[in-house]
Image 1 (cartoon, rainbow, N blue to C red):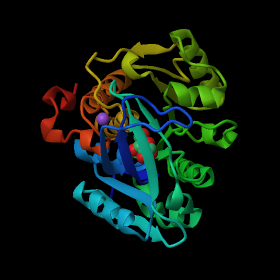
Image 2: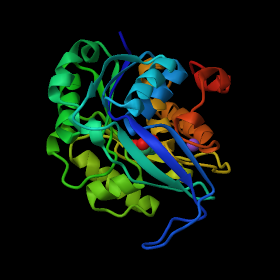
Image 3: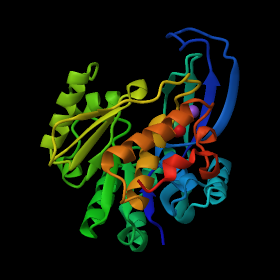
Length: 311
Ligand code: RIB
Ligand code: NA
């Protein structure tokens, strides 16, 4: 049995390190290329597992080398793959990513097999979902499957976290109603709410907008500025700053945050929400100091002990 179930995407990241993002029509020399394991769902699962959670993944990969390698990667991260299936209808998802010298990134995703994760696949995973403490979803799978996941978890009284990424306009209102914790970044929040999130005041407006739609809690991540959160019960937003470090590669930092949050919520009922968010931010901060996505996620043994204290 798993404490955390992630219903989400797997992508093979195709990462180019570039002096700057190419302009339309331009040919540019890059500095380095690497492939890695990514996809927001899988990234979040890997972070939670490396911190020490029992994690099950519900996902779809293609019947190809990227897909087979991905299943192996889950196993190496001690993630349950009973509900990771393959399809011949589409290749494993890929994500060409460009990373600039200051650690910023631009990502294209080609969903492929991820869009074949169906409600039928989800039904099969109901036994593991209903006994979980936290269920985590993103929007790199079909929104129908994502919504069905949130509903299934809620039906069984399991806490739901939605990382609404990539951001989408006109989300189904039922998504909000079935989300306990909505966790977007600035650009996702802007896409969803229509409010540009540049200043702290904008962030507060976007949070209010999301709470008004029916989410129990909103945690808006702000990159170097940390995060800001509010709940239905305590709607006054609280800002939690991040430690300032040199960013090498911020790809997947949001996933590090969300995966860590799931871990803390599932395992540390003794610490308050604000502390859980602060620690999740620290895990994300560790990840931005290293290259790559999952390659930059720390293992429990390499993490400062105070991030595992019970108070
Ligand atoms: O959030 C980072 C991830 O977004 C990458 O791993 C890429 O696969 C895309 O899903
Ligand atoms: Na990184």
